[in-house]
Figure 1 (spheres, rainbow, N blue to C red):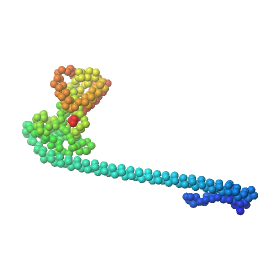
Figure 2: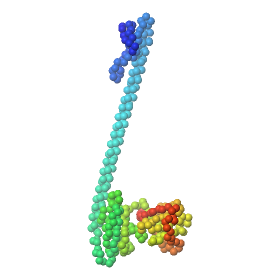
Figure 3: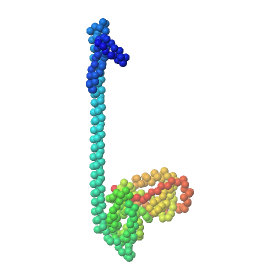
Figure 4: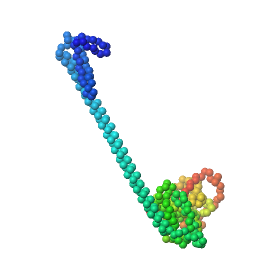
Amino acid sequence: MEARLGANQRFVDQPLVVIAAFHPENNALILLQHSVIDVTQVNSMQFIASVLDKGLQRWQDFSLQARLDEQEQSASRCGFISFGESTRKRKTLTSMEEERTEKKETKEKLEIELKSKKRIKKAKLELKPEPVSKKYNLVKLRINFPNGQTIERLFDCCDQVQQIFCFVESHELRNTNGNIIEEWELIRTFPNAQKYTDPNLTLKEAGITQPIKLFVQESLHSLLFIVSIIFSLEQKRALIKPFFKTASLRFYHFRKSNFLFILKRQNIAIILCLLAIIFFPVERFIQTYKMLRRFETHFTMKCRTTKKKNYKAMSFFSFSFSSSEQN
């Protein structure tokens, strides 16, 4: 027969054997092997051994590789599908969890706001009207709220501290972040730090007989009352040597409610202050403070009026008064 072979476009006029098969995926006709037979030199057995067996073997190898490729692609598709499904499930669970958390937070906020409204309503009913300013036993209090608002009001010295509490609770208490405060405490920082907790005392018994500034702050139970071993020295600068022999610690009044600590050897002083704050309860601080005031004459104190420029090498630390109870 006459046939055209390869790219060289040769024409042969001899018997031609072609082994072809259909592709298992796209059904395309695949030429596995072709051979021109010289009938004078090749018998039937040689033809079967050299041509047919080789062609069949190549077809089996090709078919096996095709099946392996198909299985690998199928596994990849299954893995991709399973990964996509797991990703979608994870996103769904995350969105559901976020939705539940958001609903829970919204519910808690609504409950807190409802409690706040009930507390305000109750406090307004218990609060007495503001007394007339013609009385002699009146005292003007300036109350600073956590959001920075300051309100002045007259109180009778014979009234109980509960009236101040009612006045505070008659306002919506929010912190600087806008969140409602549920637990709060009333303190003053000048001339000495004090927290008012007994509502049954009268203002006179609590020592509120002169106009003072009170602070309403959010209760922080994790903090300790950071007022210890500090003398209330108005407009003085005192050097206390018996307590810090190696570290000179000077106390300065700074804006009434703050103290400025100036340390030459700040490491030792910081360690001592931290140990005192961590390991001593509030009651021990107050007892130590009163004891030091009682035996104030036993300590050597020198007032200095040295200018700030002489302390260029010192480190400055500013601490604000804050109060807390240890439960």
